[in-house]
Image (cartoon, rainbow, N blue to C red; front, side, top):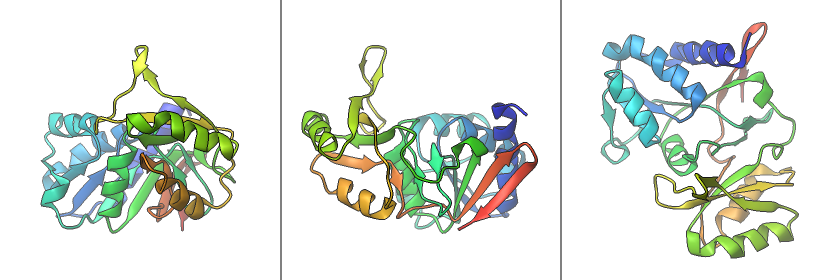
Length: 223
């Protein structure tokens, strides 16, 4: 199967975790788009969704799914999102789609995190995928130096030749050269650096379940 077919497979498989009346947290990205398309087939049975990005909100609303603001909802039943990397304990790197801050907020608001990914995303140690870090622009150069001090090479993410601006009005650094052996400790440390809005390590909001698309079908990993 192609990667696109694997994404479709896990997007549809995530429907098994959606029960009537649920408020569903929805992530961002190409794999999540497959889930949104699948969710539209049961849209009349759910209470609605809370979205982690403008892009996902637009797709949900275009398919007739009611979208609530996170501030209007006390708790979500389930959050479905992809990952750029996931390890065998459910820790993830996320933020390739530049929505990591809102993704982490919605994940924290949800009882259960269902990660949907193809099997290329499963790794032993986080860090092969460039680590996204959302930063306040005035702090960029200092944070680049802080990553350099621990062996990381941080590069400002660009779009059309200019710094990419997130939905929150901030910039993103993509950091290579890291091996994240202790995800919780790493997330805690970098989150405290002045100017860091969100680091794309999801260890405190890790996945509870990963639906992994493989050539043999969907493999379910429970953490």
